[in-house]
Length: 418
Image (cartoon, rainbow, N blue to C red):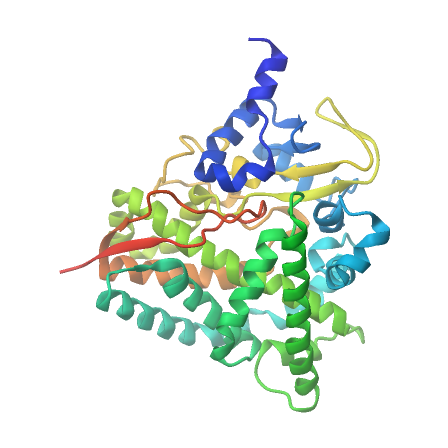
């Protein structure tokens, strides 16, 4: 077979991620084995699948790869003059998302947002998380066969985000609509017109509710994230309303749905790996590392994209200004040069500091502490009270977004410990 035939066989369209489901993982492996920096005709973009190369592309050492990326990726097919007319909220707010800035603007926003989402905030949330986990596990004991994604994972992460923001729990259905609309289209070069309209409407609805709540906190401060954001100050510099709303858009995706997806995909992975489940039960002191390995294997975090600012050569590849580079984190986390036997859940894996799950480099996930806290508490308690689970889905129904992998639903039957 010639090189061109091999290249055609390994190419993979981001638009096929939903249909392929877990089948994207061996396809990404094949692409990495062929060329870790690969020009994809299907995506008209570079697909970077090697662990080393992803680390390079995400680092401050390659400023020619810009994080001003979701606008050209999400709306790249829409003429510039039509974007504000068709999708006014997306066109205005997407450029204000913290993940879409390079230094020094990114550095400034990160400092201010981190003042609001700090260790003190997480410590204050921990008792609430523990209580919610026990309540939801009680629900599973009473009803061992259920739809896990919405009945448990969404209930947990959604209630925690609402508690963090300072909104009452009756907003959970509204939060669900926001998150699904944003996940389907944000960062998706194959987003449909209908999907973008849903995303625009969701962002507008978020802005209406959260903007009102932010203004209330200015005059009537409380002990929540919104109040902390209004008070964040770095040498007299503060967050504007647009910057706060942009940060909250990201929180709904990265702080809510990505953790929800990790819970659901984690249960699916554990159901296929009963030995790992049993090891977690017998070694509770190792839960933090066991959860990191679970996240690596489940490949919830799929990709991050960059926009090329200037021509340059990268490991022999000629990268051109205006092109898009997709850093395929799911593939880097399965690089056998870093993680031996990468398809296996290995409770003894020792180099998990090399995991790319929470983004390497400048854009290391702001909410990683909150995600690890929730996942550690939930999975640690789950394996104490249940001895296993069986997924009842004939096929897993994946969301179409290319950045985070998630499921629309997961019917599961849990086995209660005797």
